[in-house]
Amino acid sequence: MSPKFYVTTAIYYANAAPHIGHAYEIIAADVIARFQRLVGKDVFFLTGTDEHGIKVEKTAAKHYVSPKEYVDTISEHFRNTWQFLNVDYSRFIRTTEPDHYDVVSALWRKLLAKGDIYKASYTGLYCAGCETFSNPRDLTPEGFCPNHLTPPEPVEEENYFFRLSNYKQAILDHMEANPDFILPAFRRTEILNQLEELEDISVSRSRRSVSWGIPVPDDPEQVIYVWIDALSNYITGIGWNKNEAEFQKYWPADVHVIGKDILRFHAIYWPAMLMAAEIPLPKSLLVHGFITVADTKISKSIGNVISAQDLVERFELNTVDPIRYYMMASTGIGQDGSYTDEEFKNRINADLANNLGNLLNRTLNMLNKYFDGQLPQPDKDVETLARQEELAAIREHYEQYRFNEAIQAMMELVDKANKFVNDKQPWTLHKEDRIQELGNVLYTVLETVRQVAIMLAPVTPMISQRIWEQLGCQGEVKKADWRWIQGKPLVGGQATALGEPILPRLESEIVGAGKKK
Ligand code: MSP
Image (tube, rainbow, N blue to C red):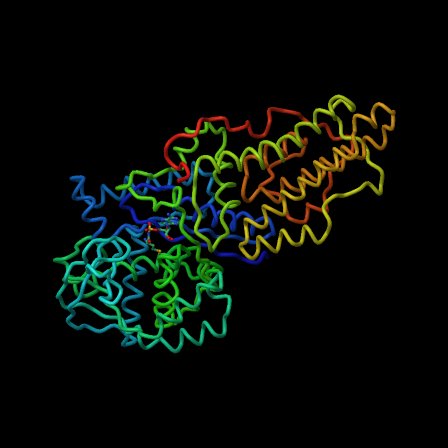
């Protein structure tokens, strides 16, 4: 039986359409999932939409539709966009689904029975944008929420509380014993600081202030406040409380991919809730940075929201792979990344159209000219360009979520192959009638391209498939196995199929949005 791998994204608030910031996160998760399948794991990949709460309720009201109608539309928009981006998830969960209601209620009852949920009256400041109570300490001098620059609303009501403070030591111990719990490691300090002053948290709101949510079991006047509802999607998704075999197979999650803004909820609230429910903790949190447009926060009010669909139109792309590639190549996972049209175009042209695309194209052209498109039978000791340690390093980069470094190492391999062609000068070998040597050179180059196609497939599945077909390889590259990189070289005699360039050069004029300041 293959070992399992369970990867999740955050679930996206169903109150606005997806943009390239959300896309960045799910592409990273999809690359992880595809890589883990490539190395033979049985992967479960969960994503979805977070559909309850005040924010959704307010936005729906603004559009004169019911919350349910509103989230149905937005959720579908997310699903369509992820399909458009070729995201291969196992389940798309919606927090409005019946099995999730059951999980949240069951989890609530468990925490209550344990004595970790209690009722108390509360006075505080609530930021609907964050869906959380604000700590007065964290507000701006004007008293605004630092994330939304709007004043939080004063709230006075009787709510249920979760004894978060009980779990402080256990969380510290867990972080100590599991140095890889929070990745990249520099994010740990932030959580260690926040653990210093840990207070119990409110986990319900009165139905008067928010009606769009899951009712508290046996107390319909109260509604479960979003974080218990949202976080538990990760266990609903694989059948907790319903399909024990499936749950046991995939839990604990290997990695929750999340943005830096929601680390606190995942590194403190979620572990505490799981400990209270006596469920093992996820193995790691992969915390990514934020994507901006030319260093400016992506925001509707600024008017700089860009979607994946916009980019496809703007550059007349015939595949979404350049978007996936750019996102993974340009920004290391913990860093913030700034999107600009210019950098996008330059990066894609340099790496995919020129470096990789031209290499394949010119080599297949020579193969057509000199060998009628048929792969020659190489010598037994034919040169290979990718050294064992280079391949191992690429795998290691993927395993450690350093996608930009994996890509860089692959591009270095492509550089090496381009240089090899220039040094060996196949056209001279042909002129001098050194046919066996000529065959060896072309074979070596195409074999390197084949290896890159497999290794790059988690990032650029469509482009890899185009390469695969032009090389005359059978089947789908997404079904390949990492062991084929060295174990299944191209076969002499195989017919190749030179086609259109795997990616036409991007020529579009650079338009307004995203121009570098
Ligand atoms: N619904 C909550 C998460 C609950 S998870 C149990 C939420 N939703 S969100 O739609 O606001 O954000 C979803 C994810 O997208 C988060 O991980 C967030 O960090 C990420 N991003 C939102 N904007 C982003 C960028 N501009 N750049 C990168 N990621 C961004 O929070």
